Image (cartoon, rainbow, N blue to C red; front, side, top):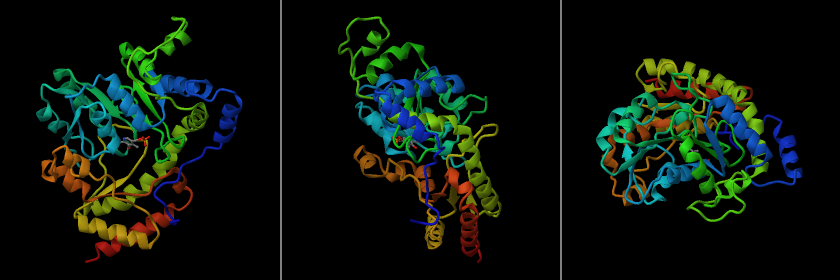
Length: 383
Ligand SMILES: *Cc1c(COP(=O)(O)O)cnc(C)c1O
């Protein structure tokens, strides 16, 4: 175990009693007591129209891709700098991922490069909020409107962040997905949510979540028996995990505040090196509120990145390189992409580092983490 690991899941203390209650309730499946509490809380506090708890962020993306009506032959524009799940949701519906470049201030999709990728086959745009920094929806939305495209926001990392207009991430696009994996700000081991902000899509979302049946209509008292009406899968989160999630949801702001202590320290440490021209740190758009999910540093060369990571390992501190761009790895190549197709993504991806960041670090280990990074930076830029 390194002295400073990359991540440690945070526990609020309420998880155990809530989960015990769920276990003893006699109802363990999805959409029951604790799950409904999570959904109610998310709708009330964050202004989501409807919420579906799913087994993972990956499952939420798959369900959203189905709900958005993706069909074989459709094209979907998304950044190559993301997790495999974002692209797999597209591929699993037989559609084609069309990769777009990112920009270095946020590592999010570059809105200036989206429209040139639109063809008559384009159906959807899936931007992500990398590191919890809201992507520039006010510049992406007009493109979607002009061409009749659905935006599904992969907000896996941005639960609790707010856009410039004050809206919570996930509340302002037809579809949005969250992840509650243990590496995210709040989690339940494995879990996720699909937010559906289009009222006319809610009924079908219930069908997709319940294995393609209209069971929901029986629960609502509309029908007396249910059956197979659509495609779908089992996109439900067990109530025992929802109980854990509810504990975390109630502490989302406290968790973000703890993480902010860490990102403030990192900003303070790295800002002078950015000023000296050695590296870049995140520059979120003015006016957004961050959930402090992640902190990244873009070194000027991949060699500097390697030296930084290697020296930090000597201190027993775990930073890591972030995503390997999707377009230039095996599956991307099979789809016909070459590394040169997205030179900006390829270049940034080869120079970025993600620093260890978790709520508990604020109270245990932060001075050591900062001192070790400071020593490594001094050594790296001594010449
Ligand atoms: C974590 C993550 C996912 C996948 O979420 P899981 O809950 O692990 O399935 C998808 N997209 C992005 C951008 C992520 O960070």
